[in-house]
Every structure is written in C-alpha cells, then in structure tokens.
Length: 93
Image (cartoon, rainbow, N blue to C red; front, side, top):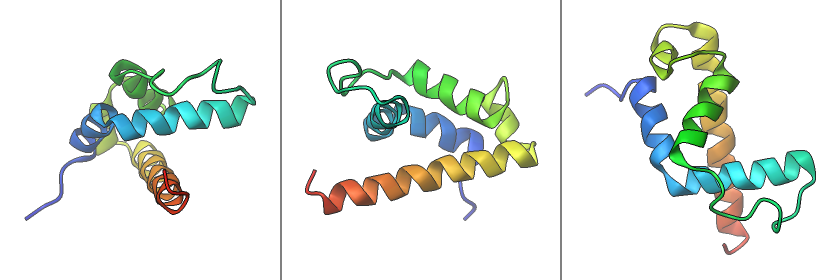
C-alpha cells in the first residue's frame, strides 16, 4: 500500500481542527499576541490551506506532489505540527 499523496495529506491537514489550533498557537507565539487577540478556533480550513500554499511557495496544493522544495517545506510543517502535538500531550492539554 502506498501512502497518500502530499496533496491529499495537505487537504486532510487543513481539515484537522488540531492543526488549525496549532496555527492559532503559532501565530500567537510568532507575533507575541495574546489569547484574547488570537483565540483558539481563529483559523479556518481556508486559512490552513492558504498557510500551506504560502509557506510552501505554491499557488495550488497539487504542486506539493511535483515540486521538491514545496514537498520539503510541507514535510517540515507536518513535522513541526507533530512535535507541537506531542508537547501538548505532555502538557496535559
């Protein structure tokens, strides 16, 4: 069995409420904002898709399967998200 394409994984990631929560946390941390300014639940599926496209430097998530540099960045996003999720579990979230 082969793994899902990066395009499919990117769509699924954007649909994942935990990934969107990760984006909320990341924006607060990166910009020094409070929970009042960027509350949990701020990012939508569209926001997540926009984030992935912009971070990976593509105008379509379909390019994640054909652009080496976009694929590498997507893999890093997934890795960073998974590390954040593990930290949340240890923090008793």
